[in-house]
Length: 331
Image (cartoon, rainbow, N blue to C red):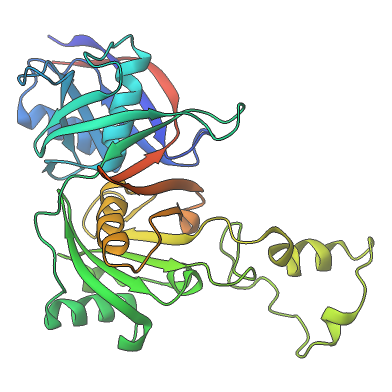
């Protein structure tokens, strides 16, 4: 006999619905077996599905189990923020007013509320990045595997490292965001390897909207066109070819996450990967202590993640919005 269980689908790392990374949340997962949870997660076909349960640790507010379409994860970033958002929205009251404490396979994860920078900006939630359980440079054969699957040359990669904190990501720092956006991964070659790539926005001319490799392809060579005054009648020229120079880059970095074999082989927004990047890059001086990331561009999304290093650790934050609120019938 099935039970009607409270259920939400939340869009994470976006304040606009359907532009971030979707998460399914069963707010009462009691009594469900591992197989039942995995079967439902496979059915949702989202990057992850979370099941909330009573905490077994005295300081935790709730316990969460996180499933991809094929396996359970001890920790994942966007399910952490999405689960906390859903729990608070459903009337959850944290034991500590300063933070929500989530219990998961990786231990206790602290989630804080971050007010918007402007009065009209939505509140963000931030989780403290768990420590990496595997780090260090990629082995030569693993690096070659990633390069081959992504169609990269060795000189395209500025640095590389294992970023394992739940998922088993191999992280690559590429020379710029344009290279990140242009990747066409060979998932068959990458099968068995989870790869995350990050690249900085170095000029204002890199695309700021949905990636379109053909945009401006017919622009005449040379600098004469730039010198010709813009005309209001020349709408395409002003809006398309020069828009990026005017608006500037959308974030400090562009990130993509490739997970061959999952229902979504490219993840729209990845908290765990960006937590790993944040620990590695800010800790080694390869990135500033505070920066922003855009992810999901090639999928038609526009997720924004904030990475901040403090004396307490590295924090990953973003907005969340509920898109579906109701019940789901599960045994």
